[in-house]
Image 1 (cartoon, one colour):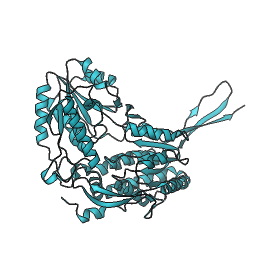
Image 2 (cartoon, helix red, strand yellow; image 1 turned 30 degrees about the vertical axis):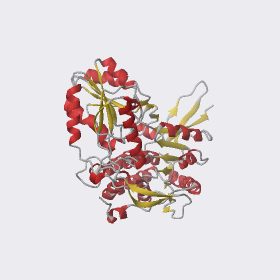
Image 3 (cartoon, helix red, strand yellow; image 1 turned 90 degrees about the horizontal axis):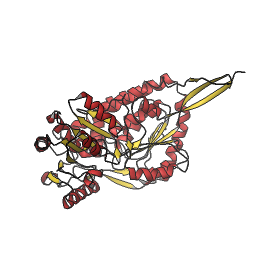
Image 4 (spheres, rainbow, N blue to C red; image 1 turned 45 degrees about the vertical axis):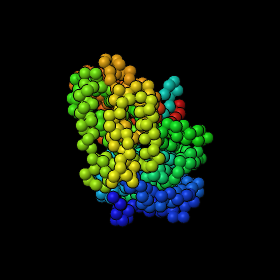
Length: 489
């Protein structure tokens, strides 16, 4: 399944994109991007070095004065033009997403519209971001606030589902008047670079969106850069801790969208067929490489056997293969190191008896042997104290455990250092509200999941991070109030 030359030609120039142009002679290392379905290189990516990081921050600082001065109605129009450009290029953007991270094209085709939706939603806030008047006492005064952008926002983003994530992030930050230095993973730089190009084509100033694909060290360089005013980081808690130590040098505020080990609770009155399909999706969607995927399934004892039987049956129907094939429903994991890490954790779970392997857990061979493929991997009777249940595997692995009472189900679900998402399947509306109120997570879905609406806030608690993206809360992450007090006596 080699990647056709025509497909590779769709990829943008794989180099830092700074002040509206690619930097071909960047000072960083070169990195061979690998198509995860074949294990073969597509393009050599020129990574940013310290010099390019400095240039990108300086470019964003220069563009900040220009972008802030754009009248808010014109800012809205340019963001709407940005969203329209994404829609026009949706077909090629979907292919780029598939080639860079292995997302099956049938799903990647839905991503550009999601990204455009987020940018359009946030564009509507551009002329509605306002301050407020404030009552004062005992001395008479006129007191009011001004809502201002932070300035230069550094964004360190992950490689999975980059299209909707970038729409969510860039839409809010740009609508609030900020400019951006975006550091995508070296494993998946192409979507971010194309976004920088499309922003420029839509009329945003040169330097409003700069892209510096680089290795992990650049994340720390950006976080500790004196020219950065705000940081958003998507990634693991361990990396977040290292990066936050860098932000302390200049007391830079941050929002964090980190890992997850989300629980799906299936009560005895649930639609067991729908619950089984969703339980399997924790392994299949993004090949399990989604921070909000349901990777722990907590099922009532009365439904245990039926649910497991259904999930195993659904797993046999999953079409694992070339992500560019429209019939494929599950692609590879992102890289050889990711594949090796997942297989090692599965092997440890088998050796320690953390759970009973029902299916999967092995690298796929035959026509898929050269790629980084693992089929849906399901473990039954999992000990919730084990690494299998507690560690974010970030692969197609789902753990099943059983409960008898509502109290036990909630205890198991909350027994995690993560708190990004929770899922509840029940036909009892009172129970749904009751459980939603006690789950220690930032997001709860009941009886299903659709893409998070642009108007809804998304984010975690505990080691899943802090801050919110989406909705009014997402805009507020990228503005800060200034208070003005005028004496009236």
